[in-house]
Length: 496
Figure 1: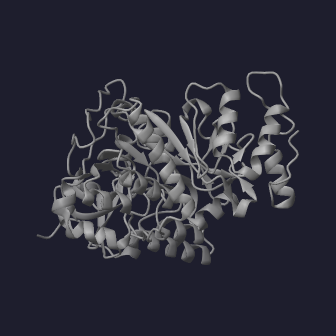
Figure 2: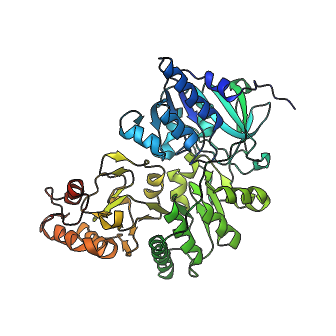
């Protein structure tokens, strides 16, 4: 059946977007991102710049994206502002050089900030879909992100109809938007597998300005096998949670798990899957990576609620080839729901996220290198950390061959305060911070998590301040960072 929407090529779609427009791109990680239209927007920006005309757009995504969006647009100097999260090296460079204005935002807050008008007018939504109906029903692909709200708020919608994703994905999504205050009600999710919305996004057909067909796979690379360091971190996390089960501070049936992105996150889940003392469990998370689907096949993970299928190419093909199996074990929701504090607190989610650095009191830096250069953004780590039953942060104890200690006297940028962090885990061990004073936290983090080559300096730092609730030295708090800036090596920092 033919559709009553204009069929466009990517260049024709890009030509509809004007300099200064604000565009909402769906997708979450590199899953479910419209690739062809984004590449065409970048090409148009280059043409406009070559002709001496300005062309920049505001870019609002669900979270990070792939090289076809963030990478191509950054290289084309096509972005005026960017929110809420990114992980692309070219976009990161443009942000840190001040060529793109970036504002960090908790992912659960993005959709309502759009609806409330806090981000201004949204001119376009660019949405990847595997199917669309004449009545304006849109079936998304491998992620949801903020797509329902982007479609609601945008003046017009461009749909990239991707044949790289099967139409049989219909039914895997659960599209739900809460009402806005003062009419908001509870979000009726009482277990990760609950479905509360629709399988499609419904929009007025008159909002759809055109459809671009494509056949481009998600730009998600493979995951490296975990190294020894990551395996030790994973084993330490699994051991900590198994001990909590034994002492009765976790229910016997366990609790849902949230896990971040990356090789360490895969290693942690792998270790949990191998630990015989941890029962089969569910995920209530932002992303589901390869390790999750492997554990679903073994029965160790029973169900996964997520925003995105952040799966490698081979794993994504396996999922699509076995949709009957995975459809009963996976649901994809908007980030406003997966990351909503109400649901996280109700379900008792155990959060496991990655830190760039931790200080000896439990404060966490997730986003900045040496306090000034952005890496990625806070993402959803704050949504989960602040509301988790147990909040865990992982990182290796050292980086750059030992020249950097990730355990420092004071974090150079703080994203998560000590008040929200239950435990810190490195390959050295676990620091359970619950119920400890600042002095006690410092001793436990140093002795259990810091690398031996830095322990003495950190203990000397604590000893230098005899009085006060928190043993800080304003003169030496950033001695590790200053030493690295001066010499490229944190060892030998003067902390007394």
